[in-house]
Amino acid sequence: MIYFNIPPYVGTELDYVKQAIDAHKICGDGQFTKRCNQWFEERFGAQKVLLTTSGTTALDMAALMCDLKPGDEVILPSFTFSSTATAFVLAGATLVFVDVRPDTMNIDETKIEAAITEKTRVIVPVHYAGVACEMDTIMAIAKKHGLKVVEDAAQGVMSTYKGRPLGTIGDFGCYSFHETKNYSMGEGGALVINDPAYNERAEILREKGTNRAKFFRGQVDKYTWVDFGDSYLPSDMNAAYLWAQLEKADEINNDRLATWNAYHEAFAPLEKAGKVTLPTIPADCVHNAHMFYLKCKDLEERTALIRFLKEKGVMAVFHYVPLHSAPAGLKFGRFDGVDQYTTAESDRLVRLPMYYGISAADVAQICEAVKAFFEV
Image 1 (cartoon, rainbow, N blue to C red):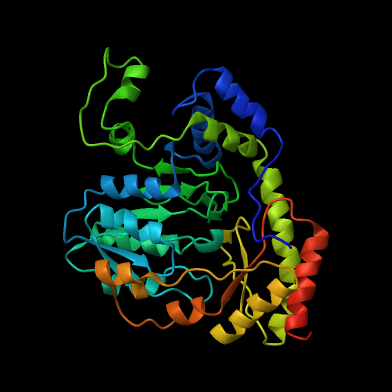
Image 2: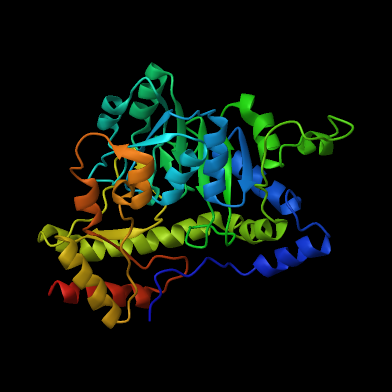
């Protein structure tokens, strides 16, 4: 069986985990956590990056720093993982879902302004599959209406929009290092803070409401509880696992892109024949090969393809059930405008195996199985 995902492993992870253990510093903000934070800041030109326990808690922190009050509204796509929504529910906001673009499955930037009310406070673009949303338009809308922008870049590490790394464009950016992501620490994430005015508050929020970070920098002679906070620090052992992959970041990225390109080349004739739709990468976007998906004719064909591939020893999956149609989505939000593409396009989409180190032979087998289904 060809697995849908195998978590990335480059070979030095255990050595670094042992180093963390031997340093007697396995809780948060040890040497490996600091190395990872610095790597992102330097590689992406980010103002400040803080590792978190997950992409979800990175979103939680961003949402809490937006100072949302009950009744405030947040605009986001319905085609996303529940974490995008729950972070803002936790902060007390009402969710306003808008439709996606069928080409990228990202939020339709032309539908955002119509969804804005006097209660709107935040726009949350989700960079699906590591392909950037139309950020210039979104940032212009946010500036016009005085709104915050929180980038859900969980899938977007190493992707760019007009040369700018995803996560560094809005007020806050959020990454995920879950085992399904291009770079992993098992469970983990990071918050990107693009305005230094939020640095101290983010540190306090992340450190259980204390000014502990200032204490360790020698800025105060003791630390104390100063504000609301929680515990968002990952273990340094997890950060050690991630550090091994950051040292090989380009190698991992190039490996995934080679697989993505092999799929795209193999299925181009299927698209030309009108049997499938392939992913679109807009001209201003550089993607990170987070995933490769096909779109079938409809839900029935998608279901049949997944079943056929399983019989051929290939694990393929579909993606999100649109949030606005889920029980919690109905409870915590509403869909603005017409659901022209969100549900219809999500019903067509199937994801193929994609991970660092997948063999050329396995990719060939997957391609042949898909072609067999469509009788090409």
